[in-house]
Length: 347
Image 1 (cartoon, rainbow, N blue to C red):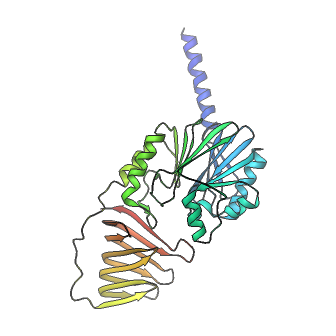
Image 2: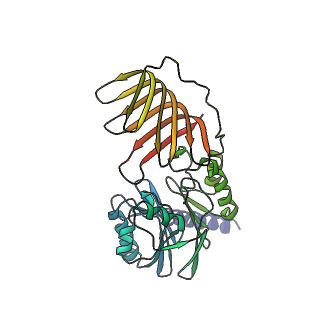
Image 3: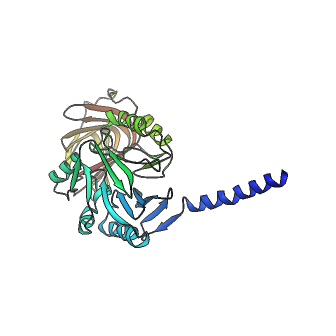
């Protein structure tokens, strides 16, 4: 009996080590693009901190989310075709942002059928971007190597069009940017619906709470605890009134690159302007954004704004969101994204 237990433990040790090596191992498709094996048929593709999913069943494969360049997208396609000897029967675009569909032209040049939520196609058309070929309303079901793959829109979150992708046979959920990695910041909220993000995450948990693996759009994959983390992260009050008023002795009123500054004082160096005790406001994508703070540091050459701590009010057509924050970054862009607004945390 003792010998049998010993042999059983020894076998478990070796098998456990083998499984650990097999699942979780990584391959490089390029200097940037890494493939991490989750299960026998699923891989996370990662480049520049952006995640996507590869699912291979039999001799067929489907990919979710493109890397953020044409070259890396081609590397990914080549890896699936040449290294895994699989035919790519579909490519799912999970949102309109460049880190999810920058390589769409390359996907089309390879003759691969592409799918996206109908709103993603609409936004792409409005912005003059490449358009995924096949649209769907709310839910998409595909068959890959005889196995089911589901794309599902469950509400607004990081963007108005983001979807999740579910591989039921493997219990793998690609949460995209609807789901945040642990320890992550509040993130880029330039296109977000903060009022709905937690509700959307709750619906994701309702439908796919049985997932074994959850892959966020950025950062380390994990379990359904990432869904719970996301629900909690965006459950903060979003209608907090501002406690600070703009001083009546305001001396500085000026505009730079569409930013309108009002302050009682400014300090200037060759590469940076710091406005003290005031506010900055600007309008982008139909949103009116006003930020009040004791210190606002603007770098004209980079068209970037940094505020260590303050209060922000976001006005949309149908809602207003307002709260205090720590560490806010605004970067203006020359592409269809227009700007990013990244926040470390709410206070």
